[in-house]
View (spheres, rainbow, N blue to C red):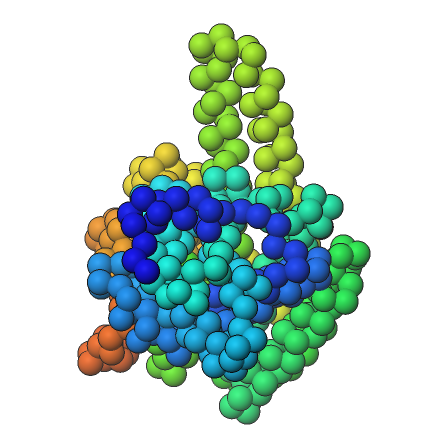
Length: 462
């Protein structure tokens, strides 16, 4: 039976909402492979049966039910949920019960279309009578991804702390892989070991995560990085360091970016992908900035009744911000004892870099602030090239291109855009091979003592 427009809008409130998901099967889209699986493990540790769906096998379904104007990650994630539900229906037959599942699709506010994925995908699921009872839940940037409304309070408190540490570990696993694999003395050694390492961390999260005995995780980090270091053939010279920035889904989803990290490694590079924690940190940082703005306005307007409430919110958010900084420092410090992976950029440093060079402002927001600022940090850290990975037609990434392409050209830093929409670009490998040739020249020039680019306008302490 057709669903009326009025019913569609009503279902945005009834079947796209935050509610206690305990006892349900939570279906999580695959994004960053390590991060997605560790996030699912965190859910399972607090009693939520979460699983990461197979990805990219349903892309044709995603494209069938979209117009092509949507952001590419919308097509990928839509295809993933449709493929998964179809597979479950075929596997279970008459025992398939849609109300047992919950589709987990976070959202963000602001101009990015990501904020409307779950609403648009609700419309598509409602076209199938057998999927109309599969609700969609989410975490949102509006409250810095708080889980308070999707699980009991006690579980939520543990989950918030545990999931952030798990994200840090996933980033360290990613950085370890990218640092070691280009130099491994036997092909496939790093991938095989890092899969076992991920399994070990998942088991630790599921078995002991709720105890929040973080030293257990830090000890695992040390074991993993100290072992991975032995895979490096020290006779190989250091390769050009390539920073990968851009839209968070496509840059971290290997299938969507057509395994760009491996392609860059094949052409002689060492890639460093912008982390998942960087975005989480930015959301918390931006929330604190918003509280500060509201506090100033309340003081100026003499709205003393709301002043205390906003002040408490600011204090709470700053505590969360410093908690994140502490956990990040602890995790990376243990890894750096054994392996010289790249630390994450501090969000405050990125903001100062943008303010210093007067290129962009955190007041504008979006991922553009992070990508532009991260690229500038990579220039100052001695990287040899920057790749901007994003969905075709992505607005924030188009802003990045407009700012970074002339700027990095002026600084003589190799730069390339890498937009994706699922199509195979016939000249992609040629373009990346040429880019890597430029990055190698940049490294050789730096090693020979020649100057590359202009000096920074200002120096910022990290």
